[in-house]
Length: 257
Length: 376
Ligand code: SF4
Ligand code: SF4
Image (cartoon, protein in one colour):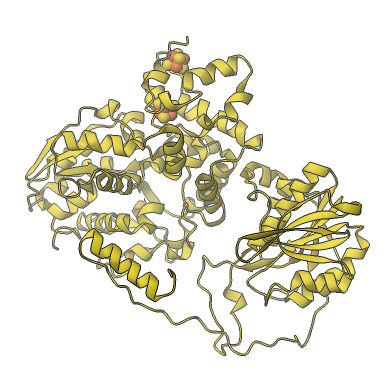
């Protein structure tokens, strides 16, 4: 099975976010980036599938920020092929740009399965996966927590999470796009010596120019940091009084019913 | 020789499926494969007791354990989750917490003494003070950092720090077999230190001191370094006239493993404490080279849940009982890990009203009329 995992960089919340003076966007110049968490899980699930059923894992990413370091790390984990798409902006591509660019690339790669994080905090509503599936005319299952072989008529099984702790087992015919929430096991740790070795040996391939969208269909009206709230109530008294007060607060806020 | 002294000396030896002696036996049998799949591989807390007591002077702590763990990591064995996170944070941000390097100087906000941030204005200094991750970020340890800044200034030392450019020196990662991560930190730090002019490096963290003193030179990174206890003890004549406020208390001192057992440096911290008027120094039943480890070294700081699950105890909880048995009012420490570990252990023992945990720096600063706890 040939799997393509899509990885995106998102603002690293370890650093404070800086908003432009016009309040129309983040100040991308001053933004540090990190690997989108659910994309990290998507790569892990792809590697797990390869280890279980054989095949190849490719990773594709837009080339900005410190993406090379991320790609070295993924190569050290077991990715076979690394493809970079040139990107000349400070701002990450939006979901439609991701989907349209990949919809041109994927047909050239002989891919059975595309995995992508089911959300990233730079996009609205986790749309990149569904938009890519629509553009490719492939089926899509999102919020997936694990994939395995063994559906009927050659289909594969994806485990999809629903609210209320419901886990659905869905059959999907390949090729397909899956939006991964978490991999079947946490993304593996690779020793730094392996990452450094990968940095010496990995060859990046470059793909077509990206599909840029001049006028995004969704326009941001205002970006601002949430106002800081500085209210804390210290609970005092005996253990029983503190416990009772805690119960009252939880009931009043609707946490307990 | 297989005398077994290492295993019988190990504070967690009884809880390890593969204690140190057995690891050596498995290595002889070419069956380390078994060891790396056992929880034992993550249970050594780097206390150096086995290394010190081995009659054949086999350096188990610094050599055998890191080699076994390196083998485990190379074989794809996953470290326990908290340790994995600490490694990742060190790799990405240069500190174990995963905090922004830009916040490294937060501890010095509103500090009344001048802080020379060499990353902003490089100038020659006598002491390059590596503040360390815990004193930079951990609120309780930030108090110690501020008191250290006040003491250095009062003594007229020309000191500077690296501000947001400072990164962890790496030690726990080396002990935990993450050689590649350690090498990366050494290379970055060597390039960083070489940019500045200083006479010596002073550190609060004994693990970092140990790494700089023993392991950095192997990578061509030799810098004169001192732990703060020896640095301040060598200036005791200068400090003494400042020590005016009595601290009327029984104080017991916990020898940290790196400066204590590993470097056999036991007197300087005691000299500092005994110079404080009013202090009555009492010893725990296990002291100096026989002191029981707090369990935080060698990455143990990020393995509490794992070691408690597999070992059935937190060593800091055991050690706090030794301190309580002395009837001391204050447990004095000289390692940033110990402050948080022992304060937790005091709470677990419900002994907050009997025993306070304080760094030697805080006690000195209080007696000098400079400390945050001393009513400046
Ligand atoms: S390593 Fe040293 S202490 Fe341990 S069994 Fe061998 S000789 Fe004895
Ligand atoms: S260093 Fe300490 S914890 Fe580790 S094996 Fe030796 S005695 Fe045990």
